Length: 227
Image (cartoon, rainbow, N blue to C red):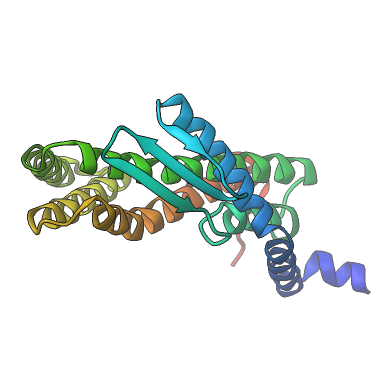
């Protein structure tokens, strides 16, 4: 009875997925934060920054006399929720062969983690650029990128994902250009970028991860819908 309910009831599998996600996040989010911070630190070190980690999950980043940053990767900023969510959904909720679901979930989770680390590094890179580059050059570059993105969004007919991506990138550049025009320093610019780019990249990688699981590994096994 219980086994049949678990295999046949979508509601039961959905509840199990949520329980698995929440339990995993509660137990592992700090470990994910420490791991993400360590990988981001190695990546920034390869890019030429002076990086140290005073505590697990924390980073100090230096570059020249004008850029000094202390960053904390919290559990909510880590890849914990996305990785655990994608794996839980692929293993428990979605139909299909167990091995195919497992492989799809792991590929999607790895993609999400990679994008999250890239997001963390991009926040530091934006702050460094704002701190070390002439304000006029920064504003001109951001305004130009925003204009180019707008043009791409207008002319890319029939390419929905490209148009959406161009609009999001153009809007992000426009907001940063506005911050620079107001005279904000690099910490203010990093805060704006974090607030906007974080959700954009997070939801984008979640969407790509779901597409990987569904189309490449699960979708082919779904039965035809009957009236």
